[in-house]
Image 1 (cartoon, helix red, strand yellow):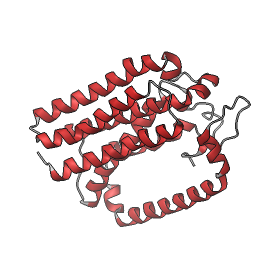
Image 2: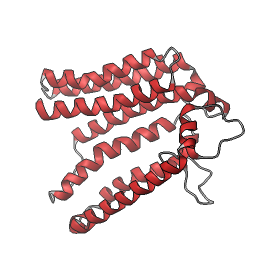
Image 3: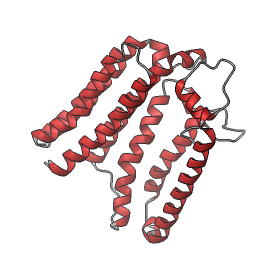
Image 4: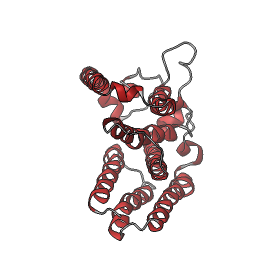
Length: 255
């Protein structure tokens, strides 16, 4: 339900027309049924995995458990828990923190969980390596920057709701040139330094460079007003491109 919650919620009196929100409202019943189905499927998979690997799960360290739990907890705090003590506190209402909360959860799901899963099914101890830290930071930065870019489409509604995102607070051009592009360059530079220092093949460096270059090109292109479909297709598409490039580089161009 977290996926559609902000769009299925009751529209405030100050609601500004939004194509995506209107689509979610029109298909509200179908979306809720689909999410219930996906949730049931997920619970079945978790139950099956727990039964098969319960011994390995018991042997996980406290730190590993805390690490795994940190991501769903932050994801829950993003929208707030339905409790009188915390329901008024939502990470998504803190404009500058919002993209980094998304980046943190996403990086955990695609970087930390797969490694822990591999260790569990192969009966190995989970150890945080220098490489895993680098991959986490790289994914965290990439998704956080994409989230900042995604806020551009919601400038009018965020400004109307007094949600101080980077775009609302600093303006479009300043955000692109002082936040998005510098963060992209720092992430790209750290990857290049790591790759060169560890003798990565030139093909691997080039393929992994593609998402960073496209990220900066897209950021530059957003100086002009774009349709909502541009954000949904192009920005979301960058995540897919990054995954494809990373997979190709890891499988076919090992150092």
